[in-house]
Length: 137
Image 1 (spheres, rainbow, N blue to C red):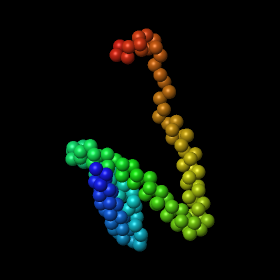
Image 2 (cartoon, rainbow, N blue to C red):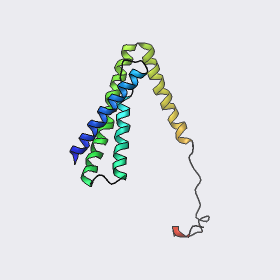
Image 3 (cartoon, rainbow, N blue to C red):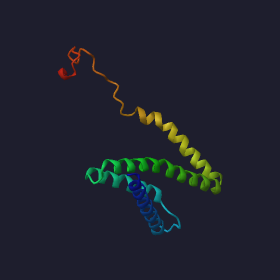
Image 4 (tube, rainbow, N blue to C red):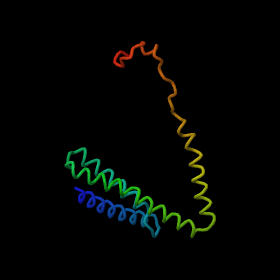
């Protein structure tokens, strides 16, 4: 049921915000540190645990999957907006650091995607010349 997904989402969000506040206090910052990310991790772990232990019927799984899928992009967008507002208030150095991080990340995508690629393929002769996949030597 969708309502179970909403309930689980609310519990995970409250737990994540509480843990984020506690983490911020522990390191001496008067702010929530990672509460949104903590909540997202809790949501993923709890749903995975419940699925593995067959504690959910199909309707409940569908509701939790729906709200899990909705939660991640919405909350990440909200957190990103806060980061941009803080960067603009922080001045040009904060903006330059953010833009630099994005540019470096974009530049790294082709490099990281080329690492570990297996470009070798087996030819038909190496496979034994048969179309039957079960006869691979």
